[in-house]
Length: 142
Image (cartoon, rainbow, N blue to C red; front, side, top):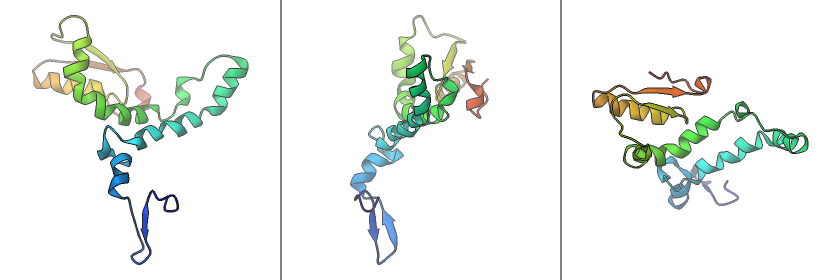
């Protein structure tokens, strides 16, 4: 990282530093321009490269379960962009009025379900959520 100029190294102090102009694109605080989040897709897809090649030879598809970190990467990718506009821009796309109890299926570690449930509980309503892949998350949904 030092040789490529991404990170600075101070030999006199023995320290490494990420210059601010690089941090602007490589840290969680760089949302939505955080390139590091998108870079996580490369090893995610690389981990199933042999499976994809086999599918080209024999047909079929790569099982969802083979994408080990999908939910973690997706949560980090969509969290800063989807959650802030969930109520104002996404839920209004659902046909019909959003009254009382509604069912909302989610992924990305169920962050959308949890955000929506918290907002509904604050308003005195109950929201039920379901995660298709509960073994992928450590969070319990109500």
